[in-house]
Amino acid sequence: MATMTESKRQLVWVYDLNKCIGCQTCSVACKVLWTHEEEGAEHQWWMTVNTQPGRGTPKDWEKMGGGYNGGGKMQLGKLPTPEEFGGGWDYNYDEVLRGGHGRSVHLQKTAGSRSWGMNWDEDEGGGEFPNAYFFYLPRMCNHCDQPSCVEACPSGAMFKREEDGLVLRDEDICQGAQDCARACPYKKIYFNASSKVSQHCIGCFPRLEQGVAPACVRQCPGRAAFVGFKDDEGSAVHKLVEKWKVALPLHGEFGTEPNVFYVPPLAPAPLREDGSFDEGGNRIPPSYLEELFGPAVHGALDVLRTELDKKRRGLDSELMDQLILYRWQDCLGHLARDPADITPTISTGITID
Image (cartoon, rainbow, N blue to C red; front, top):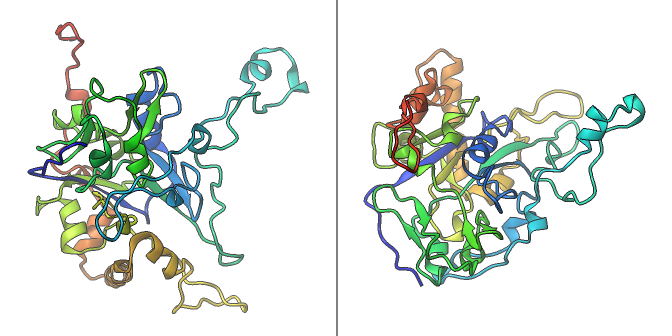
């Protein structure tokens, strides 16, 4: 088993679920940067955005186990299958676009395509008309303070990086046992059948080391993502997590102390049968949000509503200004360097001008 190392500082992510539009730009940015061309990583999407309520990816991941039990004992859960992870569907593009068949053929999935898309239940959500609801939930490796994947690793390949708390692995040591994937309760660890090693989000650490934010945060068009050190009192993430306590971990009961936090979604008041609004009601059931984010979600929602009301009445609200994010660079904290300013190098050590 691997030895747990306590990090000196901890990088954290915050996603504002009131602003995430489910565009998957973060997912694509991550994919293109890290796993697009790697053999055996075709099915790997280190960042995914799922519709809630929904079954997620891998399918029904919340029921697969892992993490720590109430007594603090690490437990191995189910290993997701490739079919449960799902993936993009293949279509007959060549036949339709280049086959010269005109309108006689149409796009359809080709034989061998996966039956489960990564977000197949898009926009289904919950509730009944006229009070249906849904919201989007970005998911990635949580780079936990108590990562069960690290404890479960039989070869010692996995470790928590001291300088920023990222959970990484040494692929030269990894034996491909996949105990890490069983132990991860969030099921965000993949297996590369070509290289025979497990792989997961690396927090874009090569970018971090040059002062550039992770791709998922930098590329978010909705200004819904924040990144920074948890102990940096001037950072947005510190204020949202520690000061205002409106950013909460997902399934904290898993016991791994995750470092990805979420500002829970507010929702319009539900409609009554006569078409009027029930201003005292909640279209998204608070009980459902509590299932995801724990009982602290009620206090977080109260703070958000109070500060939103202040803003609507023309009063100052530092919290709302932070979430509105008038300057998008403010979500990047100390990682605001433009990636275009980085001079890339190749393995020979030659600098590319």
